[in-house]
Amino acid sequence: EAGVAQSPRYKIIEKRQSVAFWCNPISGHATLYWYQQILGQGPKLLIQFQNNGVVDDSQLPKDRFSAERLKGVDSTLKIQPAKLEDSAVYLCASSPWTGEEAEAFFGQGTRLTVV
Amino acid sequence: SQQGEEDPQALSIQEGENATMNCSYKTSINNLQWYRQNSGRGLVHLILIRSNEREKHSGRLRVTLDTSKKSSSLLITASRAADTASYFCATKHGSSSNTGKLIFGQGTTLQVKP
Image 1 (cartoon, chains in turn orange, brown):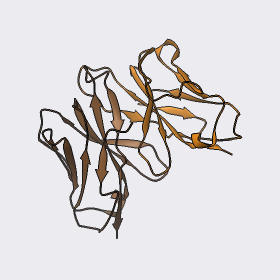
Image 2 (cartoon, one colour):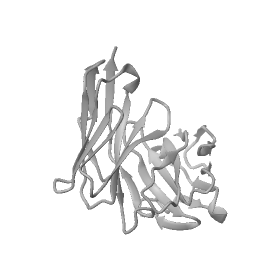
Image 3 (tube, chains in turn red, orange):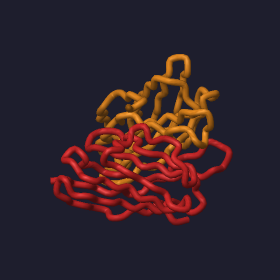
């Protein structure tokens, strides 16, 4: 089966600009996660969707970050305006709704550099 | 905030040796998972252990879970150069194992020398 697709793979922007990342989860997966991974650290959960509803966004800096999951499939994560400290890899992951504990399948990530 | 803390932060061993890395967490969990991340790549799931399990095996991997101590360990036996990667524990929290948050630790960087 096709994996989690993310685009773009790399993005360089100046501070105060805006940027958007796109994620296409594995077909049929109800749960979608966005993580921020700063170099040398573990992934930090930004937001979790169950279908098109938000399960958790407690770590999402809502003054500048926003995310949506239209029709419970694709998702976009936006940063506006970007700060230098937003430089990181943004990972998207999805999990199936199976009734059993399920693993998360990760995309390759988008590496963002804010200069 | 991150849930898990892992130690050691970095580990260097010779090929053929065993590697053990530990993970501690703070609050109750539904399950605990281990992931591997090769340089420049996404994370790959390795193994999942439920909160009511104490030990689980998968190939050269052995995971233990001690919920009384809120800790887990991952043992990789007979390591290979290809095992060189960062390893993360991730804990699942919440009322449902399917809708609970998946929180990652800071990771252990493993280097296996040929």
